[in-house]
Structures are given as structure tokens and as C-alpha cells.
Image 1 (tube, rainbow, N blue to C red):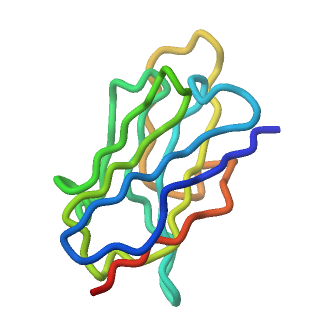
Image 2 (image 1 turned 90 degrees about the vertical axis):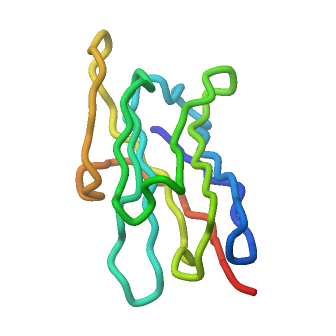
Length: 130
């Protein structure tokens, strides 16, 4: 059973940056498509970015394109979400999620629909405030 753990959340001023990390206590994340999502109070869960199992293909929501970057740290087996130029509206609980791919599969790309992902972390709070 894959267990995902997010880290790196916190309080930051508008215009600042945070770096979120998604790790696993089970299988390496190499065999999963990984996505980052967020949910603010009273709002629906929003897909932010996904990265292919190979790490070569990424997909971003318009709301974060140009500000957030998803990447794989293959030495650590983690997936990073680098968040720059943060805004107050970015305040939310941020989750990473994983969907397995078949062994030997080529690059698999997924969209930003949270319902397509089977494994979820507990979330990390990001608060953007002055």
C-alpha cells in the first residue's frame, strides 16, 4: 500500500516562495504519475500540476502556470512542487496524489482531475498572508 507524505508547507508573505515535497514510505514514486492538488475552505479540490512517470511530461492548471513548477528528484525519489510569486488566493491545503502505471509502460500523462488518482497524502497547509 502506497503511503504518500507531503512536507514543506507553511506561512509565507505574498510574492514569496515555498517548496513542497511529496515522498513515499512504500514503493518508489518512479512507477506512478504524480499530481499536486489543493483545497481551500468551502471550495472544490483543484488540480494544479501533474508529472509523468518518466518525469519528462508535465501538465499545469492555468491558475499556476508560470508560477509553479513540478519536477522529480530522482536521487531522493520525491516529487517537488516549487511555488513562486505566491498570492493570498493560493492559501489552501496542498495534497500530492499518485496513480500507478504498468511496469515497462512508456511515459504516461494524466490530466488534473483529482478523481483519477487513487493514492493521497494527508496534506500540508500553505498560508499566504502579510
